[in-house]
Amino acid sequence: MTEGHERKKQPELVRRALIDCAARLATECGLQAVTVQAVADAAGVTKGGLFHHFPNKQALIEAVLKDQLDRFDAVIEATLAQDGDSYGCFTRAYVIANLAMADYAPALESTCIALITDPVARIHWSDWLRARLERHRTTDAAPELEIVRYAADGIWLADLQQVPADLRIPRDQLRTRLLAMTVR
Image 1 (cartoon, rainbow, N blue to C red):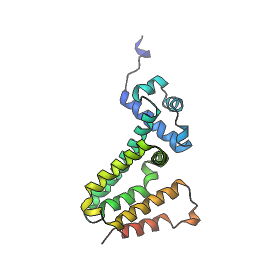
Image 2 (cartoon, rainbow, N blue to C red; image 1 turned 60 degrees about the vertical axis):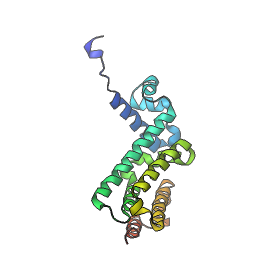
Image 3 (cartoon, rainbow, N blue to C red; image 1 turned 45 degrees about the horizontal axis):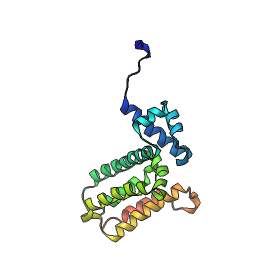
Image 4 (cartoon, rainbow, N blue to C red; image 1 turned 30 degrees about the horizontal axis):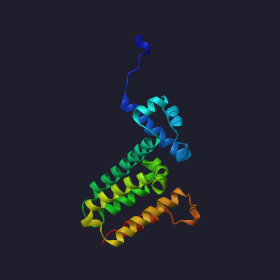
């Protein structure tokens, strides 16, 4: 093989492309559009190339979900770094991250549908949330803070269902009210 035909192997870049393409397909067309062939085609690899990185479609979906959760978590960490360790700090970060999700992790909305139907995905989310709540037990265990987190989840669900704007309070007003509820 001549030098011009050799392709440098970059497994991390290929893996990243597969995750990004699967996330984009989920966002643009729904989770049902995330097929092995569609993702391989979008990433410019063969199905065998995809299977080199992910043994099956479920493993790919889990990698997308983990990637999106990592992005969600990074926004929470950045917010916590600015907020400190006071009452409601995790809940404030959760509200901010949740309401900004479309800006940094749009595929999380689509892949989170799996949280409703897929037991493995629910376990990943539950494990993440359990670890976070344990870490912030001294600042965020109050029932009123749990209610605020549920309200933020409800806003996310309304976004996912594309509830019309005329049936909703403006997002900035909701955000301000929820954040105010996290301060003593």
